[in-house]
Length: 557
Image (cartoon, rainbow, N blue to C red; front, side):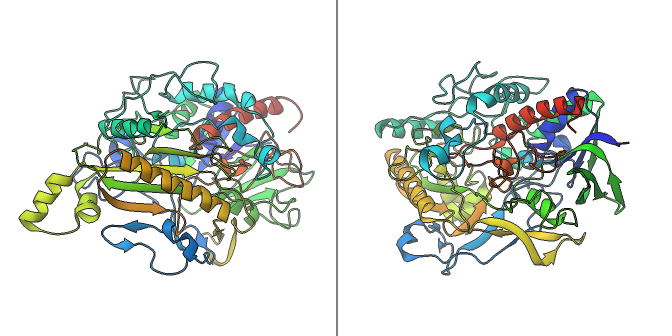
């Protein structure tokens, strides 16, 4: 007898969405989350004097939960892509790329707790990278298969977006009108117009008017520090709140899954987790959904090896952990001669999609997007200005400089396609384990020349926009050539039609293990041209959970 119909491991954009959809369909769900719950009214610090001291008030540190393999050597031919600030000069002093941070949150709601609300659909052509451009892999579904589920996700979280959506055609308008462009973003819009580029309001899971008993945004511009008003559509205040209200979703936080057990007949027979008090529990279900994210999902599957799965669970193809795609990003920041008040508004309020199609950057397969990047650089408060704009100091002169320059920093950022390569992947570290004894995931990272050419294009274009906007002093140029610094990661459990070249099928179901599913960004066959992945993860999970509900009603599981 199963304890539940489905156990979902992980509560972010994949797991939280899946748990709600299943519970709403009458399925008994157990949702396990390794991190704690956050109370928006109590845990976030934007009302306190120390609000700027941390980017997000982390309860459970995530940075010690992974390691890095040796990083690639830096080459002089790409020296113009090295990160630099006007205060410290070159950030990475050595000749080797610096291992930095995988930005994610352990908590109920996952990394949406600190995401900046961007809600993007994937460009339809980005789902055909192999057949059209000979790189990455094709998605085993089409944009039109996902479109109704995009619409469902947008309608549930309350996405505000513009009428013009370009190649991402829609069957209905956004549920909420777009946010207006802030003054700094208006300056960038004028600059883009002089360069023949477009600039439009970004699509954001941030409320532009009251919606679903949640208030509209107050434009504090600090979404990445946690939203105390609940106007940002993070998974905890949307899907998980609705899943809890069904009465059919049991939620347990502080629970670390130790292993998923491979049984007989190509079925998972159970999983074992350790609760917050240190006690171990075994739970059985008819189906199991792993949604721990692109780094932790392969770690759990690889660590679940036994006699029935000697190379790790679901790893018959040998591709669990392979095809990792990380963030390819750049930000150019300068000081504008006018007082812009650039600390106000919503993050990335303006965006340029002109180069988002996979063939839009000449000579390089894979697209990019450009955006208002002041918030991404975290130049919002006096501490950041003192350290990175004015320079540390004291007394009257420093005070006058702060008054003169505060709110004048403006940035243009860009994100681009990262193509999978054999030197970028996740495996288990043979030397380091966590407190439960499980080996830590080890990140191998290599940025290939094709990606660096794309990054070069981003750097050049962001600088042109700043200059056209009237920026007369460059403050920073920050990129991922010389530093691993990533939030969006994809691909370590690729989906596809062929069991030899993928881990799961187009419904997230493993090719061998009949009741095992993966529902997070690890299933992405390609990363897209700079789109933030949260909305696509949600749409995939809604689609796959609907199919899983049907499977549960029959004899397939």
